[in-house]
Image (cartoon, rainbow over the protein chains, first blue to last red):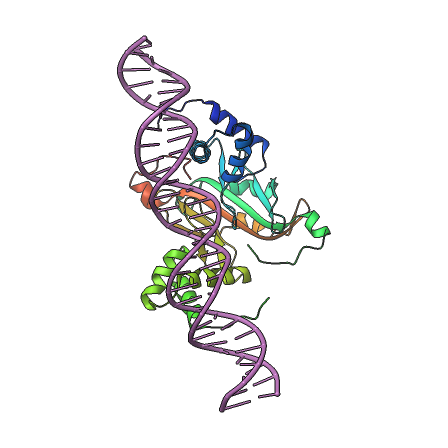
Length: 135
Length: 135
DNA sequence: AAAAATAATAGTATTGATTATTAATATTGT
DNA sequence: ACAATATTAATAATCAATACTATTATTTTT
């Protein structure tokens, strides 16, 4: 792998990612663009992919949305509200064996992604829950 | 929800989906197009979305690929080989509590998706495994 | 069994996220 | 400072997914 350099753009993008909440690349671009209107969209995509390849950032493949990015690297699952779209990090004991699996059916495991489609308390309180399968 | 009709196109698409192995919509379109060259790409996307909204089909958002579709509705996780891209359905006892969770942190759970990034036995044997984080 | 109402389709155009390209700029090692 | 290498901005290109629309198929009503 090519040696990587530390640039102002990368720092800006990483800082914005840590401040943001599971943004898509495009959302992060908009965010970063306000701080430095000169930054390119392609740079955001490239830097995120680079960090993701390193394992410094996790790329989330959430159904029904573009890829999202997460600066939290400790093992955790995601709760996504089907109605308002918010995503919450979550960890509980039953997930432990899933994230620590090293081999399954002869496949060597590198990492696991666990996503729950759900209804958040706020949307439930607002009566938004239709019990849908929608995804 | 609108009442749904059972059409020749839908049957064709569903049959092809069950015969195929976690295809993307485009792959499925190509497959179906050979049997009926008159069928429209938009129809494949529409029918798959319809089934997915019903819960008859699961939509998978897999890293580095377009959405894929799975006709198997019983709870199961996916093993994806980081090198050859193959996807294998898998179920083991430790996953049971994950798929049967009904509520977490006040979020009401509708469904769970579990995906393992891995190296399949064939790619491991071929020495392809680089232990990568790549996704 | 027509007519009316509704759903689905084919074909095409459009959208929008992501990737490729390339010339210019910045960073690092010597 | 110089040479080698990595990074970037800006733009163009790609391609999955969606929107649109006129037409066709199916169901329901009369």
